[in-house]
Amino acid sequence: MPVYPLQWHPAGERHSYPHMAKNDAVLWERFLADYAGNFLAFAYDVALGGYLPDEPADDLAVRKMWQYSTACKIDALGERPDDLWIIEVRPHANVASIGSVLCYTLLARADGLETKPIVPCVLTDRCSPDIQYCAEALEITLIQLDVKP
Image (cartoon, rainbow, N blue to C red; front, side, top):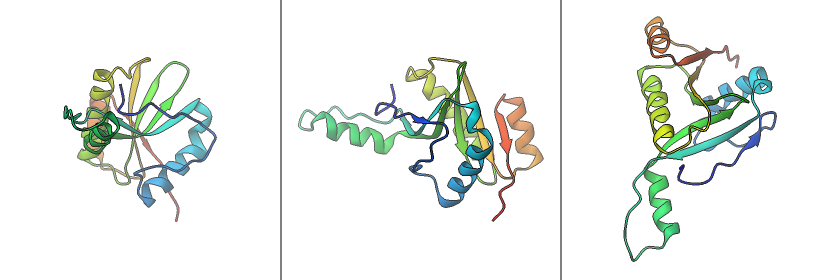
C-alpha cells in the first residue's frame, strides 16, 4: 500500500500539486484543461516504497514520516473507469522521466496499488525523437503539449 492513504480529488477540480515545480504545474494545468474530462479523479504525490524503520522507541507516525521521506513519489495518479494512469510530469522529457515512470509502475504493483490495469505516462512539453522511440518501445504513453508563456 502507499505510505499514506490516497486522497482523491475530482478531475475537474484545481488543487495544489505537492512537489511539482512551477514549470511542472504549468504543464499539469494545461493537461487538466485538455484531458481532465477523461478522468474520474486524481491523487497527487503518491508515495510508494520507502524505508520503514523498525525502531521500537519511535511511534508509528514517526516511522511513517521516515518512510515518506525515503519513498518514491508519483506526481499524479489518474483514475479512469477502466484503468489507472501513473503520470510523470516533466518539462523536456528525458531518460530519467522514462525510468521514473517505469519504476513507479513496478512499485505500484508491488505495493498493491494495481486495482485496475496501469498506464504509465510521461507528460511533457518537448522531447527528442530518441525519447519518443523509447517510450513507444516500452509501452509508455507520451503526451506532449505546447505550453505558451
